[in-house]
Image (cartoon, rainbow, N blue to C red):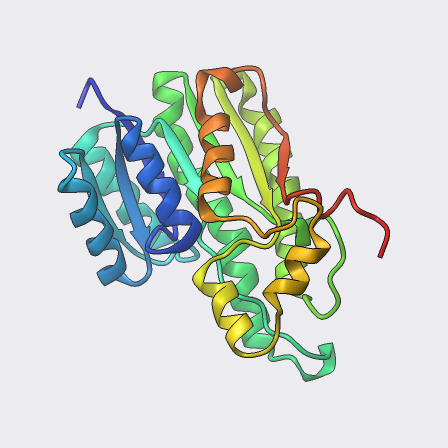
Length: 253
């Protein structure tokens, strides 16, 4: 695998994660495809392999340390190193008044978004230390920067991802590793489609509120990630790149 760079993408079975994995594969990366739904990971691996590129399915829950260790061990045994880690795995927040929210759902969201990012980064980093180079990109959200009512788990967890990104960037800078985050706005994924279908969101209203006049596609987010893992971003670390079509810049309501 010496002529391939090695990447791991969590939550890659659909949506943003899938688009990131496909973008990395198109740039000659061998991709470890993680998803808690193994059938989704296997389907994407099969799709990548048909293009002549390398991929491996990595079943597991990013918030469970034993699962994370198994995933990284599989990569190490098969490919020997990790060059890029994309912490993308996530869940949709519960809606409604705080006093009516379920604590187990709250804990699950924080575990996947924040604890999962922590565990994956911590476990992958030693493989990057050995080669004295690496790129970690964490998927945060504008909900981690702005305040969205009732998003009591998702918002704080994504804020935590941004702060964790900064801390890891400082700690690992002298190891040749850059750690950055991407904060998407609303993105046309299966999650958003479900919320639109359930009447929680209205896509036309979201598009109208966005200065660029539309919500993002998964490819828009993947393009930002690809920039941060590229040589063009060699001197960028500890940064959160907002990709929201101007949503967070637009303060007038």
